[in-house]
Image 1 (tube, each protein chain N blue to C red):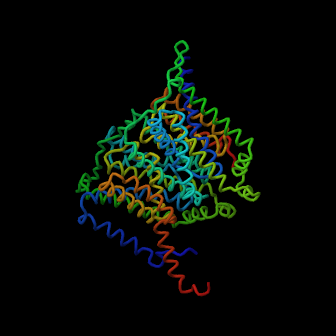
Image 2: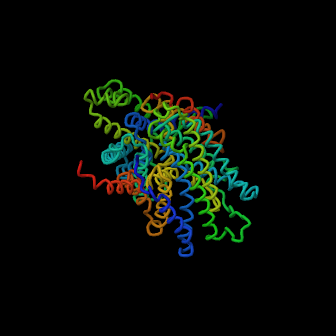
Image 3: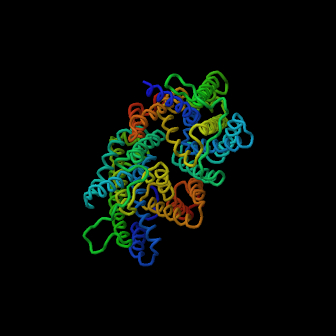
Length: 284
Length: 324
């Protein structure tokens, strides 16, 4: 019983981290159909920038904010210079963003070296609650809280604001959206920046949890993709459910069948896609 | 009608290339010969991917999985059960074909971005097994000490020149078979599906079945490349089938030219040489490789052969430009 509770808790908190990473990616996918291999790099670079900021300022909130803003700017630059011209060309998108991912990987290696780091978390977020034999790190609750807050804010923005309505319109039918006078380019840029911003938030948050290290970018990238495709591109609800599903499957897979752990994650994903090719909440 | 660069003497350019490949070993250093061998093997993989990417129009993000399946089959069978070449070859290709036949059922329900993503997830399934199923695959340590096959020839394949010819033979066989496939009515149907799926369906072609067979063929040749790779390298590890490798094969095809066979082979050669030669001179080869990715899409979106073809087309249409 304790095993199940602990693993479920770990799975949910990992799912929360994945939601931070993949929520924005899902909107990017849904709106622009851009396959962004750089998304994992945003996560990693966000973590590194956060690490530097916290080294200078000792402020964890500032690390999250500055890390995320810096990466959002990088994302806007990449989108503006290259990606907006590649709409509908999946191969071009994959290769261009892969090129950026490799360049960012190397630049990160030059700047921060090859050693793994852990971002120091504030005292109030360290430690753990213990209930009987059970042990719940506070930091994991924090991740769930951040993801929950982001989910609520995103939902409110999408459902209750004018910009959100424009975003949804662009996801549903870009041509019609353009036709009724929505500046699809500007909306796309905002969404792309938002996705990069959230990926970097995930990177800083993860820095206090799994650490920041070379290779983390390509390690997490398939998870983000799988969350998005299983949930359905462009669906916030799908991203949320997909994140929890992937987080739980990953944790239980690793705990129960260590030798087959990735298989137990990706094979069910493929099975879900075999039944619903556009994901659980995706639209064709 | 699309203008073909090699129309008329279609065989001349390939013939010259193959002649050069055949006579080059004595003139090359052993390092360069090793790279050329590696390029030939990757060329098979890239050509096989092009069957679905260039000819059918489906970009797969999991093609390295088939390389891995072929290579791991050889690695496991030869190091554990000491099987001979023919059994290992058959098992490696069969393994890739069977897995492609299963994956194809799942992946071909989608197109475009969804196809990319599903093939990515499927590729990760195979990678995950290589990475974690330690009792079978030895995990991240990989399988080492795979010895070169003994074909009963007077030349030992443990030496680099005989192995080069062995790889060249594998490449040529693959090239001729794939060329026969893409020129056959079946291959032309794939091109038709790429150009307009709905039209081919209206004409009464079984679109799904054609795509499926193309997908399985691509997987099978990917597995064959994997068999050669395992023997060449003597070592297989999860790196061989990770996501970055799958993307790299996509780059090879895009760089050389989609929808051709020599294009992907050329792209494979360029990337293999670039990676290895640049890393001799600088640690910053990832930066350069990244720049090549971006430059390919910016400057040669149709690949090098595509650029040459466009150039030839322009040269030919120039005299009649006055009417424009």
